[in-house]
Length: 269
Ligand SMILES: Nc1nc2c(ncn2[C@@H]2O[C@H](COP(=O)(O)OP(=O)(O)O)[C@@H](O)[C@H]2O)c(=O)[nH]1
Ligand SMILES: [Mg+2]
Image 1 (cartoon, rainbow, N blue to C red):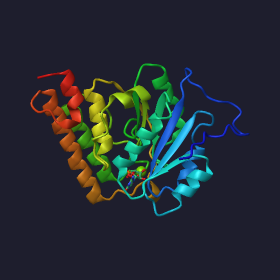
Image 2: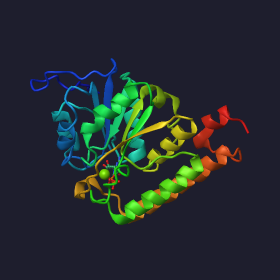
Image 3: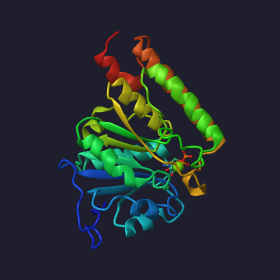
């Protein structure tokens, strides 16, 4: 496996170091050839010490393009799903020992320029996790989020906040920053290999007692930035309801779902 740091190249006179912390970005990729370069170029120069892209057996040019940008690439030989992709992202990047890890979709949907703010919130020591929210700031629909995705997001977020006893503006964003310590503390290895991985992980974070920081992120919806269709969204939505129920049952001491094993260990009924 090859690993190259982002070159401190000619147009990058400065390195951004926040509280002496090292920052890694991980990009779970599937058919990201058209959008990867725009995403990469918008990452603040000098901020990222390590960059990793995990390709989930894309049938386009994603791997070659990532390599030509000097990004470390890990390839799944077959399509394993979005959750499995993130597991490879976190396992691989934790071996590089960064202090902060940002997960960013390489589909240019979320603005990478906010990464400095998100990593800064973690480096400050106030938060161990920060999400980029499309809902805070109120621009999701103007940014092109389909109305049914918006409605589902708001509904599921309401249910989940009640079930988990939290107050997040959304649980479904693909833009998240974590301290490496949190990534080691959360037991995500048995989570779903599908899209609901993200939601399970935030549920685990909330039940583990972490406070989630939020930053508003303008949303961009265009063809390459959104491929999940209605059917897959429904499956995802049902998965989210399952996570909410499991979390509620665990908080009430009624059922120890494997997702929240560590929570139950700390809070015996
Ligand atoms: N690993 C993996 N990722 C996928 C797959 N399908 C979509 N993705 C990625 O999942 C992320 C979210 O999907 P996307 O279509 O952008 O959803 P939306 O932006 O929420 O409408 C994107 O970064 C996609 O590249 C897949 O089969 N495997
Ligand atoms: Mg997207």
